[in-house]
Length: 316
Image (cartoon, rainbow, N blue to C red; front, side, top):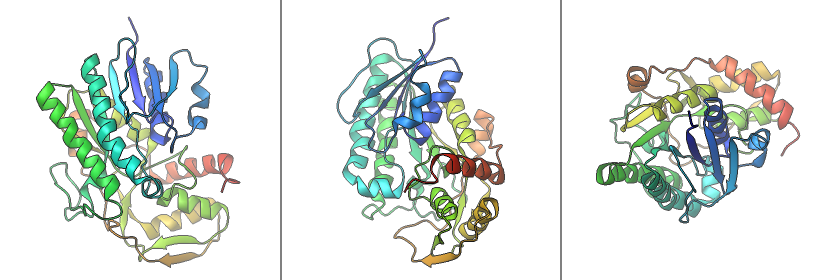
């Protein structure tokens, strides 16, 4: 039986590299494409000698193709943290628009299953809680975060247009807060921020009063949900995330407990358009994918702390 061929854009990124690991473990041949704006070759260094893995440095915002058969195209290329997409606003918009279309065209040409990585950010600062896939969102289209939010909303619209107009076999995953090994130490998101500050005995920076909530999904759970969606026949957007909520203050105290740090908490103003609540309704994933998260925040956080200690403790 011939191996399935999977193309993963953003394959040297945090989630993209873990996705490559999983697809290889599932018996696929994997081609990872990345322009390395935010990805790192360190994330895939362990795969470079694998005969079923290939890396190509590629800007998917320009037309491109792959020689031979392709079964899956997974579009994960994009700056994903506020630090990165505010540093690269035009690149973020382009990879969500031009990049998505070029990947859709590749899937159309190869008659491949196409899966695009969307985000809970398409819900904005939500007025519905928890957020169902049917919720249209509460988004500021011209705010500082809009380059990411609107890029992903456009990517979803373009994906559905290709599905309806050209019968491309598409899927959309809406990813909620995810954490784990291979996150960038200077990512700017709360998990690496708190871990890095705690490991360096620096004050933990809390924005706002710390009562805003997040739901934290460990990377292995998320990747399992994504792959189940890839192998399914679903076309509508599906939330993948952990519905168990924690306040930022609760999470800060958990980081201090497991790291053994004695850092103080310092408070700063809440960034513009920062959501007060973020929690997925995962009814669709449970029903159609038989998926729900298994790793507790306590377990995942300890594993993530161990990885940061081993790999990033001296990195600034």
